[in-house]
Image 1 (cartoon, rainbow, N blue to C red):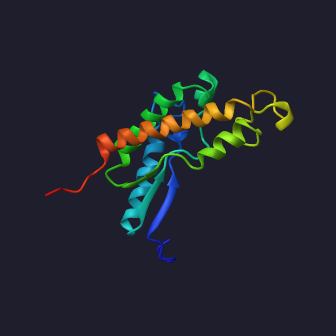
Image 2 (spheres, one colour; image 1 turned 60 degrees about the vertical axis):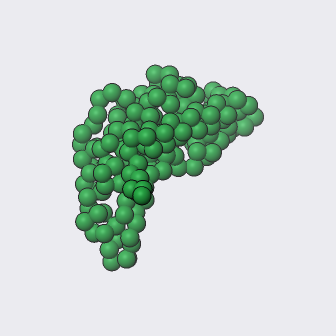
Image 3 (tube, helix red, strand yellow; image 1 turned 90 degrees about the horizontal axis):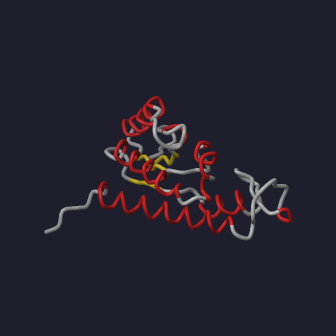
Length: 164
């Protein structure tokens, strides 16, 4: 990266790597991986840009309550996001909540191309799903999750410049 004169690097923090079951027990080896990555970047003058979700919903949440189809995911995502802000925020100043949220909703719940592969029969070769409602439920929960994470970040972790 240094040889390429890169001064920024965007990466995703895998929710499943930090919280293998989606919530609860922390995988400290996963946390150390991201600490090592962030420290490596900063040591070389490369600014880290962290994305909190890139198509990697923990299977435990999908199994427990239907994942993104259930509003419970908002609270679990908020806990994951806050853990990341608290753990890495002393070194990461730039955050993204979701990579392509429209794609998550449409390709996972409308035509079933992405996980969890849900759709109505006319829209793909899926075993379950409702293309008329599920993409909108998922989009709604993604928006609520985004808004909740942003609120937490702004209220607790965002560093604001001093005012006169």
